[in-house]
Length: 212
Image 1 (cartoon, rainbow, N blue to C red):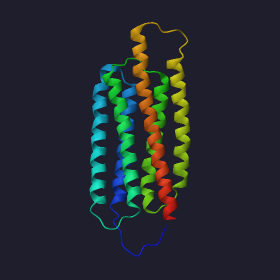
Image 2 (image 1 turned 90 degrees about the horizontal axis):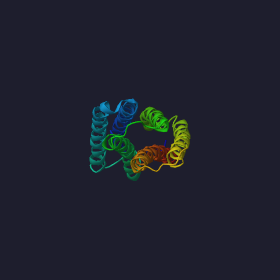
Image 3 (image 1 turned 90 degrees about the vertical axis):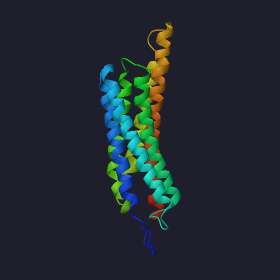
Image 4 (image 1 turned 120 degrees about the horizontal axis):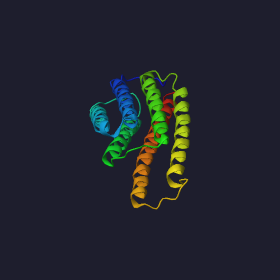
């Protein structure tokens, strides 16, 4: 790690860890929602929303601290990017949960379960990595792993899109077409969450390289 002559504020590290742990909660609740029967989904969506609100509060704490301390542990721009990308993850997770309930979707394609499973694994990896930021140790495995998970998420995304947009039987019913459009919005949002995880990992990589 780069040598510093001036003591810096270390309170950012616990906040990043809390943000990542909160994402684990949100991803877990989303997984429960996707596996649940439609009548049980609104309550689970509320839990995802609660996690999203908690994430907003943590992001706010980081921004307030960023604007109030003189010396930061690493570049201010990187702190902002990391906080924002963590927030983007939980926002996308909440949006996906909200759309599943709002659109009153019934049966969800198996591909959505695959997408959410990847998100849960990316969330766990991110939560494990955030405490290591302070020492900048053992982080390379993290960003390599998350980039690999993003590739897996892309495969799941393309597979579920193929099933929706190129079904075995031609869809002529207007209601069925609308259902496809609704489902596509959900899978697109889940892909956005996977992309946001990759942005978190890339930001961590950038920070580690600068601080080496």
